[in-house]
Length: 126
Image 1 (cartoon, rainbow, N blue to C red):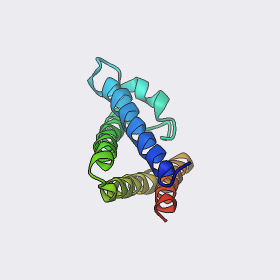
Image 2: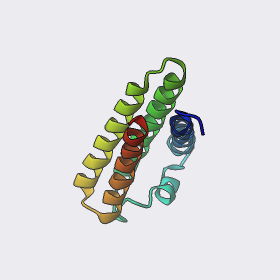
Image 3: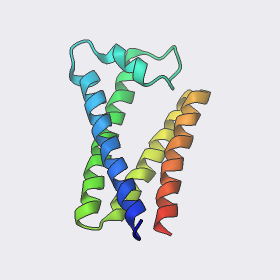
Image 4: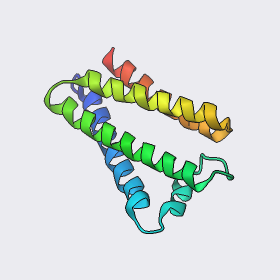
C-alpha cells in the first residue's frame, strides 16, 4: 500500500463511524418512542439507567457522530488532520467521563476502545 494509504483508510472508517452514529442515534432521538431501543445498541451501560441518562447518552453519541463526520470529511479536503485528532481526544474525554460517572466495567471497556482508536491515529501519523 502506498505511503499514507493506511491513514486514508482510517479516515474513511471515521467518516463511516460518524454516519452510523448519526443514523442510529438520530433514529432513537427523533423516532417516536424509540429511545428504549437505544438500550439494545448501548449495552455497555448498566441495567438500571434512567430514561434521561439514556437520552443524554444518545444525544452525546449523535453529536460525536456529527463531529466525526465533519472532521473526517474536512481531513480529506483541507489536510486538517489535527481536527480529526481533536475529535478523537474529545471522544476520549467523553468516554472517560462516562466511565468515571458509571464506574461499570463495560463502560470502562468503551473508554479503552475509544483510546485505542486514538492510539491507531497516533501510530499512523508516525
